[in-house]
Length: 276
Image 1 (cartoon, one colour):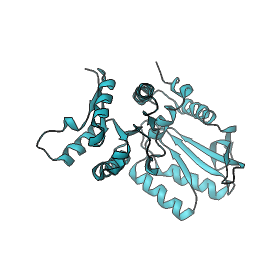
Image 2: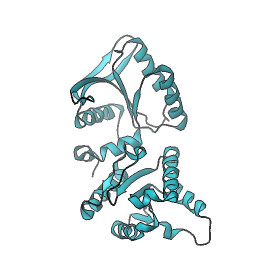
Image 3: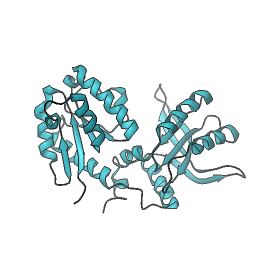
Image 4: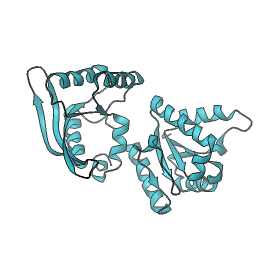
């Protein structure tokens, strides 16, 4: 029997009709869609919620004015965000009407249904499909590095140069990115990119330590650092990164396997690298 991907829809009671409509539209032999209707009657709501979150692959957040005006929904939202960090479940925000998206969700790929629900459903199905098919298992270290080069190009990095080494240190790419400053003028940023591919091992804190050592020893003080890995940051690694960034007053942008899948889902050229 093939594995069925489990999706849980979080919504406020005022949006129940929309939630049930989305559930119906997403129905597929390979997808199981759950809502509060699937809670066991007479049992504790929090116990049910905990089980649904921990057993689901994806959580859909139906965002609306009513959702954010509901104290229960807001509490539920923070539960999802916390659990997603611990268990790395994927969260997909779905805006069913115009509303203010909280900053905690800004880095997620929100799908806007209120513009065109049919187009929104197709985009949602495509994103679910990508999350299902994207796997780094068939990559070699060299292949993952080549894919990272394509990723950087697709996201607008320029003048990407490979393999910067000296006798003690090595990084994989140096790239330029152009952003607008608060006055609207373009400014150039230099990004130092480290690519770390793991076959079976868990993410190592030593990789973060090494990047900070690069920064202290050889990198320009105003350069930005980016670490891209197929592995998933553990909570220990996340805490260590947060602490050392405060101590060193230096930022490292880390894209782990979970974030990487979401970035891939936004670019057709990257998706095509994985689709059968």
